[in-house]
Image (cartoon, rainbow, N blue to C red; front, side, top):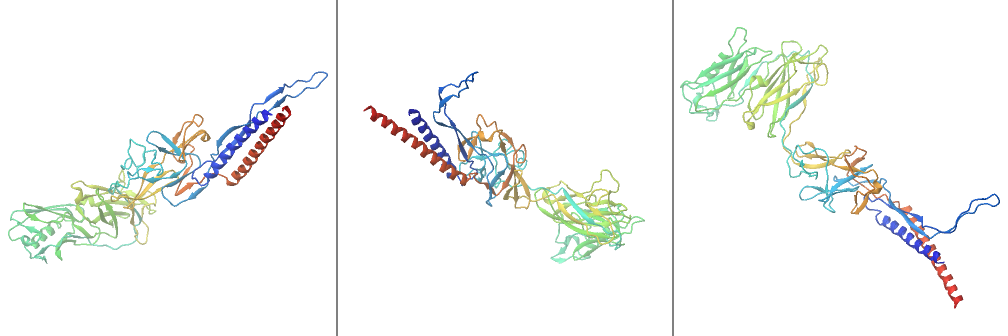
Length: 554
């Protein structure tokens, strides 16, 4: 009977543990990322009353006679299966679909969790707001931009760091340049500056010294005239300022400089609404360009370059694109595609740029854009390599020229420019520059990469989450607050990233619910209660029998 009492007590203890586990599971039924546990029982060592015997030639064998000593809790193990993912709409909520754990650091060691309810603290670190533990990163995303420290794996959300401006280096163009349109145009250049005298538009008879744009001009000072004529030949001349030099004198000098050479159709300089203009004497393809440079110690505000009001061409197509300098300042680049006299060949010319400081003939014109017989892009006149770039100096950049490469398509392909009959449709469809910006929004990809949306409209990778996998996840040791640490039987953590090394994907704006099955836990409660009551009954009956025995002795 003493064995019955001991067995009953062990049964009470075991079923009490079963009740404790079921109760804990039900208590955490709404705890995000919680993994339920289960209890398995095993019998205690039995008391052998008689050993088994083997059969003989005359008698059969006998089985052992044993009385068990009760029950023991064999194991309490965790169910590490996937919980249901629920959408929360919070951008910093994250859930892992599949294997793996988020990696956080408590300042001394890494801990691991399935709960990705993260937030940003006052120091801009991504943390678990319940504990302040910092989320860890993997890879080099965000380091080059200054968002992340190369010496730390703590993820910073760079609300306090500007995305540096990026100067435009490439412009992509696509569309058709008409093969059959013939609409010759006349080259017209304009100074872009309206010269005035006392606020009134200057005329041919206005003295240069009286212009509002001059101050202290002296006789003997000079103006250098340079550029290219309609045929592309270099133009170089010098105009010497006299005491009574008028606007017409400068215009006559420009006209003379652009009318030299037997094959040169010439151009005429004039003043219109105060602006100096240079107009070709003939229509059609032209490479006319003009620069005026004042050589003196006083003041004469001359244009750094002349705008091209109308490009001289057999046919033309105009397009605009916004580009950025090294300080992230936007400029509108106006480009005209000019059909040359050579069939299947075009030039691209920068007609004007807002905010530009300087642009010369070589930097503003890209010559020899060719096309194949089937209308596909043919490259840059057969040059090797096929390059096409403008060179522009912006006021804000000092003296350094900014090269802007044009991506015109694949030679022999139709993924960029083409030349077919019909309307010209070529236009810029992208450029890689942008202004400086600040972080305005976050999202996470299935690969666990945090991407930021900045106020300049640019999306940029900020960081990549570090995940960890274990050989035996059920062997992890719970530390409270939804954290796990490695144990002797879990295996060491293997740092990886989402969708790599056996890790699952990351779902943004979601959290993983508990995997507790309430129906099963209610059944476990009933079973624990029944087992407890049965063992309590065993103790009561054994106790009654001992009392009866005691009464017999008395």
